[in-house]
Length: 186
Image (tube, rainbow, N blue to C red; front, side, top):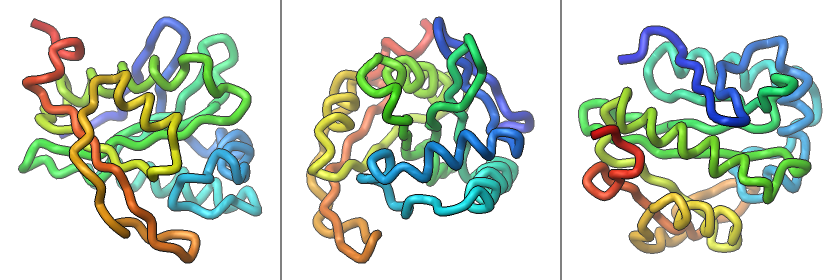
């Protein structure tokens, strides 16, 4: 049980709670169709949608359903992406990881750095045993990222997702505690 929103710090990043003062950055990020190409959200068309998303992040954290960090570079503390856990089922010690990053920051190692801290937190502080991820087959960058982080492909969930008017096959990946020693303090 998390009573206060935890802030995580890495070499280059702050993973912190997103608040209403971040609405402009969240709107910029979530209004980019390329960022959301493989996401179950439509691109935002106004800043009010960003404010609602931020409110939803907060409500779902307080009800212990999810935790979503804003990813900010230390040098300016401006949100350039988000990552975290959703479908958090505490009684079965599992959650699903999700993430996205603004285009200007792709292929710079930012998401690897952010998710390494997120996964470590999940195992050490949330007492997770299993972290799952579902990815569209057409998303090679995300497939490569998960494999790099130690996730194991478990199979294809046929027509598992439905968004943007279409059914989508998704690859299921998971990282389980007994195979994640790089993330857990001895």
